[in-house]
Length: 98
Image 1: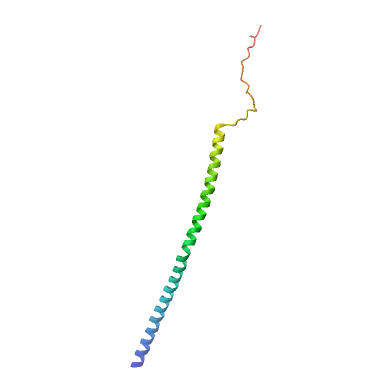
Image 2: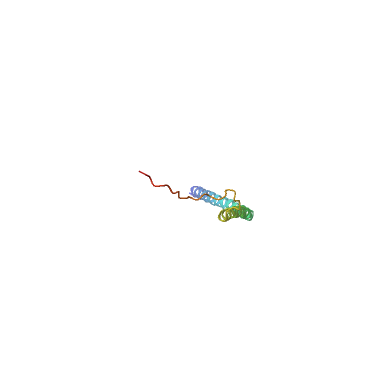
């Protein structure tokens, strides 16, 4: 009677041990991954800010160029090569004779 009881207890112990061991290994792997990600955050944050700064600088330059183009178009150019434009004039014609 003792032998089947010991076998069952050993089997239950092995199953529980495997479950606890795999849970421990999973937790340990998760903790290692967390520490790796945590240590890489400052570098990634710095890189993200550098990218944002580059985009903001390009947008500012494009905005200034557009503002200058609109201001130039609003003021008009100083070049008067076209000369005066002809004005429409009314020509008086003689009434038809019969």
